[in-house]
Image 1 (tube, rainbow, N blue to C red):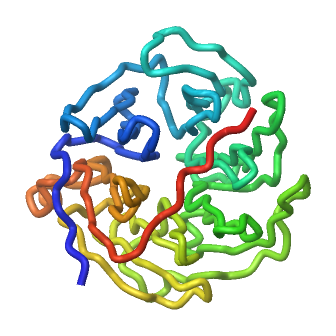
Image 2 (cartoon, rainbow, N blue to C red):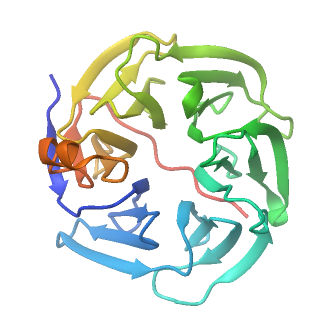
Length: 289
Protein backbone atom coordinates (compact mmCIF):
# COMPACT_ATOMS: atom_id res chain seq x y z
CA UNK A 1 0.00 0.00 0.00
CA UNK A 2 1.23 3.46 -0.87
CA UNK A 3 0.73 6.36 1.52
CA UNK A 4 0.30 10.00 0.58
CA UNK A 5 2.12 12.52 2.78
CA UNK A 6 1.74 16.27 2.94
CA UNK A 7 4.91 17.56 1.32
CA UNK A 8 4.16 21.30 1.25
CA UNK A 9 1.06 22.81 2.84
CA UNK A 10 0.85 25.77 0.47
CA UNK A 11 -2.90 26.32 -0.02
CA UNK A 12 -2.83 26.70 -3.80
CA UNK A 13 -6.07 27.89 -5.35
CA UNK A 14 -5.38 25.85 -8.49
CA UNK A 15 -2.07 24.02 -8.19
CA UNK A 16 -1.08 22.44 -11.51
CA UNK A 17 1.66 21.49 -13.95
CA UNK A 18 4.22 20.15 -11.49
CA UNK A 19 7.67 19.19 -12.89
CA UNK A 20 10.92 17.91 -11.38
CA UNK A 21 14.15 19.46 -12.63
CA UNK A 22 16.89 16.89 -12.06
CA UNK A 23 19.57 19.48 -12.87
CA UNK A 24 18.70 21.58 -9.83
CA UNK A 25 16.89 18.93 -7.74
CA UNK A 26 13.89 21.25 -7.62
CA UNK A 27 10.13 21.05 -8.02
CA UNK A 28 8.28 23.65 -10.05
CA UNK A 29 4.53 24.08 -10.28
CA UNK A 30 2.00 26.77 -11.05
CA UNK A 31 -0.97 28.17 -9.17
CA UNK A 32 -2.95 29.13 -12.25
CA UNK A 33 -5.60 31.31 -10.64
CA UNK A 34 -3.09 33.22 -8.51
CA UNK A 35 -0.68 33.79 -11.44
CA UNK A 36 2.29 32.38 -9.54
CA UNK A 37 5.14 29.99 -10.31
CA UNK A 38 6.45 28.07 -7.28
CA UNK A 39 9.78 26.38 -6.71
CA UNK A 40 10.77 23.98 -3.94
CA UNK A 41 14.50 23.24 -3.55
CA UNK A 42 15.16 19.77 -2.16
CA UNK A 43 18.68 20.69 -1.03
CA UNK A 44 17.44 22.97 1.74
CA UNK A 45 13.65 22.38 1.60
CA UNK A 46 13.11 26.06 0.82
CA UNK A 47 9.99 27.30 -0.94
CA UNK A 48 10.06 30.25 -3.35
CA UNK A 49 7.36 31.98 -5.35
CA UNK A 50 7.40 34.17 -8.44
CA UNK A 51 4.58 36.41 -9.67
CA UNK A 52 3.70 35.98 -13.34
CA UNK A 53 2.11 38.54 -15.70
CA UNK A 54 -0.84 36.28 -16.58
CA UNK A 55 -2.32 32.92 -15.69
CA UNK A 56 0.49 30.40 -16.15
CA UNK A 57 -1.43 27.31 -17.26
CA UNK A 58 1.42 24.86 -17.89
CA UNK A 59 5.08 24.92 -18.87
CA UNK A 60 8.01 22.82 -20.04
CA UNK A 61 11.65 22.78 -19.05
CA UNK A 62 13.91 23.75 -21.96
CA UNK A 63 16.86 21.66 -23.07
CA UNK A 64 19.05 24.76 -23.11
CA UNK A 65 17.81 26.02 -19.74
CA UNK A 66 14.81 28.00 -18.61
CA UNK A 67 11.18 27.37 -19.51
CA UNK A 68 8.66 27.40 -22.30
CA UNK A 69 5.61 28.96 -20.62
CA UNK A 70 2.01 28.43 -21.75
CA UNK A 71 0.14 31.45 -20.45
CA UNK A 72 -3.61 31.85 -20.89
CA UNK A 73 -3.36 33.12 -24.45
CA UNK A 74 0.28 32.97 -25.57
CA UNK A 75 3.62 31.20 -25.27
CA UNK A 76 6.82 32.72 -23.92
CA UNK A 77 10.39 31.79 -23.06
CA UNK A 78 11.61 32.70 -19.61
CA UNK A 79 13.78 31.69 -16.68
CA UNK A 80 13.49 31.66 -12.92
CA UNK A 81 16.15 34.31 -12.30
CA UNK A 82 15.25 36.76 -15.07
CA UNK A 83 11.92 38.63 -14.79
CA UNK A 84 11.84 39.40 -18.52
CA UNK A 85 9.99 37.19 -21.00
CA UNK A 86 10.44 36.52 -24.69
CA UNK A 87 6.90 36.45 -26.01
CA UNK A 88 6.17 34.01 -28.81
CA UNK A 89 2.99 32.99 -30.64
CA UNK A 90 -0.36 34.27 -29.38
CA UNK A 91 -3.10 31.66 -29.85
CA UNK A 92 -6.06 33.46 -28.24
CA UNK A 93 -7.09 37.08 -28.76
CA UNK A 94 -9.31 37.51 -25.71
CA UNK A 95 -12.59 37.42 -27.65
CA UNK A 96 -13.65 34.33 -25.64
CA UNK A 97 -12.74 32.99 -22.18
CA UNK A 98 -10.94 29.99 -23.68
CA UNK A 99 -7.38 29.65 -22.33
CA UNK A 100 -4.49 27.23 -22.56
CA UNK A 101 -4.40 24.40 -20.01
CA UNK A 102 -2.49 21.13 -19.55
CA UNK A 103 0.74 20.55 -21.47
CA UNK A 104 3.73 18.23 -21.65
CA UNK A 105 6.60 17.58 -24.07
CA UNK A 106 6.64 14.50 -26.24
CA UNK A 107 9.77 12.32 -26.25
CA UNK A 108 11.15 14.31 -29.20
CA UNK A 109 10.98 17.59 -27.27
CA UNK A 110 7.89 19.16 -28.85
CA UNK A 111 5.42 20.77 -26.46
CA UNK A 112 1.84 19.48 -26.63
CA UNK A 113 -0.74 21.68 -24.93
CA UNK A 114 -4.52 21.92 -24.98
CA UNK A 115 -7.23 24.43 -24.11
CA UNK A 116 -9.83 24.92 -21.39
CA UNK A 117 -13.26 26.36 -22.27
CA UNK A 118 -14.95 27.36 -18.98
CA UNK A 119 -18.31 27.70 -20.73
CA UNK A 120 -18.17 24.09 -22.00
CA UNK A 121 -18.84 25.07 -25.60
CA UNK A 122 -16.04 22.85 -26.97
CA UNK A 123 -14.18 25.81 -28.51
CA UNK A 124 -10.76 24.59 -27.40
CA UNK A 125 -7.96 23.05 -29.46
CA UNK A 126 -4.90 20.88 -29.00
CA UNK A 127 -1.62 22.40 -30.14
CA UNK A 128 1.95 21.25 -30.75
CA UNK A 129 4.85 23.72 -30.44
CA UNK A 130 7.63 22.49 -32.70
CA UNK A 131 11.00 23.64 -33.98
CA UNK A 132 11.20 27.37 -34.43
CA UNK A 133 8.27 27.75 -32.02
CA UNK A 134 5.86 26.94 -34.85
CA UNK A 135 2.41 26.21 -33.40
CA UNK A 136 0.45 23.44 -35.12
CA UNK A 137 -3.22 22.74 -34.39
CA UNK A 138 -3.69 18.99 -33.97
CA UNK A 139 -7.46 19.05 -33.52
CA UNK A 140 -10.37 21.16 -32.31
CA UNK A 141 -13.62 20.82 -30.38
CA UNK A 142 -12.14 20.44 -26.87
CA UNK A 143 -13.61 21.57 -23.54
CA UNK A 144 -10.84 20.78 -21.03
CA UNK A 145 -7.56 19.25 -22.21
CA UNK A 146 -5.76 17.09 -19.63
CA UNK A 147 -3.74 13.88 -19.13
CA UNK A 148 -1.25 14.68 -21.89
CA UNK A 149 1.61 12.18 -21.55
CA UNK A 150 3.51 9.57 -23.55
CA UNK A 151 4.59 5.96 -23.34
CA UNK A 152 8.29 5.39 -22.60
CA UNK A 153 9.06 4.84 -26.31
CA UNK A 154 6.97 7.87 -27.29
CA UNK A 155 4.77 5.89 -29.69
CA UNK A 156 1.57 6.16 -27.62
CA UNK A 157 0.03 9.46 -26.56
CA UNK A 158 -2.56 9.73 -23.80
CA UNK A 159 -5.13 12.49 -23.60
CA UNK A 160 -8.48 13.35 -22.04
CA UNK A 161 -11.15 15.94 -22.55
CA UNK A 162 -12.04 15.87 -18.85
CA UNK A 163 -15.86 16.24 -19.08
CA UNK A 164 -15.97 13.19 -21.39
CA UNK A 165 -14.71 11.10 -18.42
CA UNK A 166 -12.51 8.98 -20.68
CA UNK A 167 -8.75 8.76 -21.12
CA UNK A 168 -7.86 8.00 -24.72
CA UNK A 169 -4.75 6.42 -26.19
CA UNK A 170 -3.47 7.29 -29.67
CA UNK A 171 -0.78 6.04 -31.96
CA UNK A 172 1.73 8.89 -32.06
CA UNK A 173 3.92 9.60 -35.06
CA UNK A 174 7.27 10.40 -33.47
CA UNK A 175 8.37 12.29 -36.57
CA UNK A 176 5.67 14.68 -37.74
CA UNK A 177 2.18 13.22 -38.06
CA UNK A 178 -0.85 13.95 -35.84
CA UNK A 179 -2.06 11.39 -33.28
CA UNK A 180 -4.17 8.64 -34.87
CA UNK A 181 -6.17 5.49 -34.04
CA UNK A 182 -8.05 7.06 -31.13
CA UNK A 183 -9.24 4.45 -28.63
CA UNK A 184 -10.54 4.33 -25.06
CA UNK A 185 -7.77 3.60 -22.59
CA UNK A 186 -9.74 4.04 -19.36
CA UNK A 187 -13.38 4.84 -18.60
CA UNK A 188 -14.42 6.75 -15.49
CA UNK A 189 -17.96 5.37 -15.51
CA UNK A 190 -17.34 3.63 -12.17
CA UNK A 191 -14.85 6.19 -10.80
CA UNK A 192 -15.67 8.88 -8.20
CA UNK A 193 -13.80 11.67 -9.93
CA UNK A 194 -12.86 13.01 -13.35
CA UNK A 195 -9.53 12.52 -15.15
CA UNK A 196 -7.06 15.37 -14.70
CA UNK A 197 -3.26 15.33 -15.13
CA UNK A 198 -1.36 12.11 -15.87
CA UNK A 199 2.21 10.81 -15.98
CA UNK A 200 3.72 7.57 -17.31
CA UNK A 201 6.34 5.69 -15.27
CA UNK A 202 9.35 3.70 -16.51
CA UNK A 203 7.26 0.51 -16.67
CA UNK A 204 4.74 2.14 -19.00
CA UNK A 205 2.00 2.43 -16.37
CA UNK A 206 -0.11 5.58 -16.37
CA UNK A 207 -0.82 7.49 -13.14
CA UNK A 208 -3.86 9.75 -13.17
CA UNK A 209 -4.95 12.52 -10.79
CA UNK A 210 -8.69 12.34 -10.19
CA UNK A 211 -10.34 15.74 -9.84
CA UNK A 212 -13.17 15.38 -7.34
CA UNK A 213 -12.09 11.84 -6.50
CA UNK A 214 -9.51 12.53 -3.76
CA UNK A 215 -7.13 9.96 -5.20
CA UNK A 216 -4.45 8.97 -7.66
CA UNK A 217 -4.95 5.84 -9.76
CA UNK A 218 -2.28 3.78 -11.52
CA UNK A 219 -3.33 2.00 -14.73
CA UNK A 220 -1.53 -0.80 -16.54
CA UNK A 221 -0.55 -0.27 -20.19
CA UNK A 222 -3.79 -2.10 -21.04
CA UNK A 223 -5.94 0.31 -19.03
CA UNK A 224 -6.60 -1.91 -16.01
CA UNK A 225 -6.59 -0.36 -12.53
CA UNK A 226 -3.37 -1.44 -10.85
CA UNK A 227 -3.58 0.49 -7.58
CA UNK A 228 -5.35 3.39 -5.91
CA UNK A 229 -3.83 5.93 -3.52
CA UNK A 230 -6.26 8.01 -1.45
CA UNK A 231 -5.32 11.63 -0.69
CA UNK A 232 -6.62 14.12 1.91
CA UNK A 233 -7.66 16.61 -0.78
CA UNK A 234 -10.65 16.30 -3.09
CA UNK A 235 -9.47 18.01 -6.25
CA UNK A 236 -6.24 16.30 -7.33
CA UNK A 237 -4.74 17.94 -10.39
CA UNK A 238 -1.31 16.85 -11.63
CA UNK A 239 1.83 14.91 -10.73
CA UNK A 240 5.44 14.17 -11.57
CA UNK A 241 8.15 11.75 -10.48
CA UNK A 242 11.10 13.28 -8.67
CA UNK A 243 13.85 12.71 -6.15
CA UNK A 244 17.32 11.33 -6.80
CA UNK A 245 15.92 7.93 -7.82
CA UNK A 246 12.79 9.33 -9.48
CA UNK A 247 10.74 7.13 -7.17
CA UNK A 248 8.73 9.80 -5.39
CA UNK A 249 5.46 10.93 -6.90
CA UNK A 250 4.74 14.61 -6.23
CA UNK A 251 1.09 15.58 -6.56
CA UNK A 252 -0.63 18.98 -6.76
CA UNK A 253 -4.17 19.79 -5.67
CA UNK A 254 -6.64 22.68 -5.71
CA UNK A 255 -9.03 24.54 -3.43
CA UNK A 256 -11.08 26.10 -6.20
CA UNK A 257 -14.53 24.67 -6.77
CA UNK A 258 -14.91 23.40 -3.22
CA UNK A 259 -17.75 24.46 -0.94
CA UNK A 260 -17.20 25.65 2.62
CA UNK A 261 -18.27 22.21 3.84
CA UNK A 262 -15.86 20.45 1.48
CA UNK A 263 -12.99 22.70 2.58
CA UNK A 264 -13.76 21.81 6.18
CA UNK A 265 -13.69 18.13 5.20
CA UNK A 266 -10.52 18.53 3.13
CA UNK A 267 -8.53 21.34 4.85
CA UNK A 268 -5.30 20.24 3.15
CA UNK A 269 -6.68 21.01 -0.30
CA UNK A 270 -4.21 23.06 -2.30
CA UNK A 271 -1.21 21.26 -0.80
CA UNK A 272 1.52 19.40 -2.64
CA UNK A 273 1.68 15.74 -1.60
CA UNK A 274 4.40 13.12 -1.93
CA UNK A 275 4.01 9.37 -2.43
CA UNK A 276 7.06 7.10 -2.17
CA UNK A 277 6.70 4.29 -4.72
CA UNK A 278 8.40 1.03 -5.60
CA UNK A 279 8.57 2.06 -9.24
CA UNK A 280 10.51 4.82 -10.97
CA UNK A 281 9.56 7.59 -13.28
CA UNK A 282 11.32 8.93 -16.33
CA UNK A 283 13.21 12.19 -16.67
CA UNK A 284 10.86 14.88 -17.87
CA UNK A 285 11.15 15.45 -21.61
CA UNK A 286 12.38 18.97 -22.30
CA UNK A 287 11.46 21.39 -25.02
CA UNK A 288 14.27 20.79 -27.45
CA UNK A 289 14.27 23.93 -29.59
